[in-house]
Length: 127
Image (cartoon, rainbow, N blue to C red):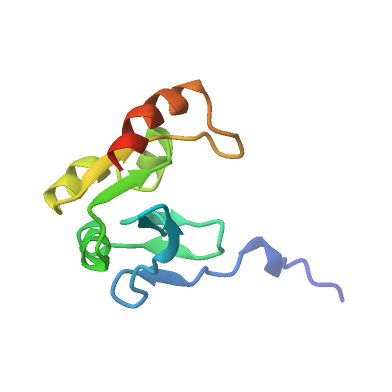
């Protein structure tokens, strides 16, 4: 007798990544006279392309960025993605953590555009 139950109708629960259990990992890339740190979005919430569920704490993650030695935070995600990840207040939180915030959004799967180039003319010089 064939079963009419479909077990694939319930996708497996994604593992949850938090700021406490999984501290923010920052990869260092030497650049000019300094170092660029790259990390997932601080404070992110929701499913990730890395097949995990983010439940990060923005304040803890930004403290980790500052403790790493960063003086600035450059975000490359747009406002809609910031909203989707639950970090609409990223800029204010970064500044409260003592970090200069530079918002240089690049649309997913696209190269930087003219607006990015204009913003980079300032931010690139300051950074």
